[in-house]
Amino acid sequence: MPSLYKLFGGSNSAVKKLLLWRQGDEDERWAEKALESLIKKLKNQTDAITCLENVLFSKNSQSPCITIPRSLDGRLQILHRKGLPHVIYCRIFRWPDLQSQHEIRSLDHCQFSFSKSLSEVCINPYHYERIEASVPPPVLIPRTSEYCQNKAFNGLNNIGFQSQFINGINNTVPYSNTTNLGHIYIPENNSSSVYAAVPFVDDKNWCIISYFELMNQIGEIFKANTQAIIVDGYANPITTTGRFSLGALSNVRRTPESDAVLGHIGGGIQLFYNSGDVFVENVSSSSIFIQSVNLNCVKGFHSRAVVRVSTGTSIQVFYASEFAQILANKISFGYQSVNELTKQCDIYISFIKGWGTGYSRQDLTMCPCWLSMRLCTPLSWVDRVLSSIGSPKDPISSYT
Image (cartoon, rainbow, N blue to C red; front, side, top):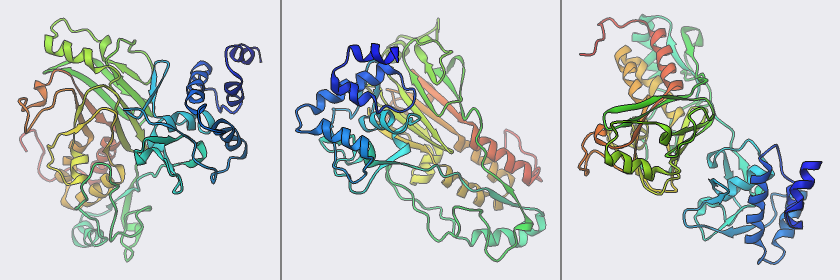
């Protein structure tokens, strides 16, 4: 209680009341500053603060929208942390473990949801709901090579896996002509006893990140073991959990161009992992450039396409369910075809400077500051599938 008394000592009465509804053990000073900012934005609206208090008391999802003005980049800065307003207040009042906008969605009747990109944003925490994580289904390996060649994959291929996907970065890719997508990939007229299931298993370190300047790797690899990761240009100690600060890495041979780009990375990017799906959000003041073979495959782009992501924009760079489909389809083509999917487990991100078609830099290694991300969970999945298939008839080497 003494800590609450001390906290309330410097807060107005409206903030005091709202703090009583705070969930979890979120940093008290940060929560107080976030609520002070909210009160300032609501004070000119008649009964808006009272309406918010009533919503928190009743937990009524049919309550009216409670809105604040949308900032230029859509984010709020609270102390030294920037975040989306609806995520900030849903985290304070409902879900203290909330990490990203990709974990929640607005209810249909919310008129000012963040996704509508209006001049006002609804921060009513009961106008949003949590999205349940969907774990990709296992892929099935025929237990005998003879069955594999003659029957099993004919059945698998008839399920209706689709290789064509719709374009548009923010669109959700629909499945079609596929049965039991939420369960095991198996033809209805075949017995599961002839298959060995290889399940999706989350890796403790879901990705490893390497930082490069031109052709040179700088510092040690960073192992991501938390759901949300920040990669920024500041000089925060590397030991900080969930944060990889590139400014803390020294390079005695750093070029002036790399030094300039590093100095402009600022808040950098935020990475978010959810049951295999991976999202990247650009929170720096400049564009970033991403190459993801999985994203390109899902969206129907050229496999080596580079996507420009503007500041304040979020993009999904790995689709776990679609990867499961592709993996299941590739099994019928043999070991080498499955092994090719390891390329979908690598993602490359360049800060500020792009490369490839339309740019003076034709190769990634010509970029001043860039990241290599290796996704451990899908890579491990491919490896276990390869182990189940068995060694290829023709040896694989670096020349094949």
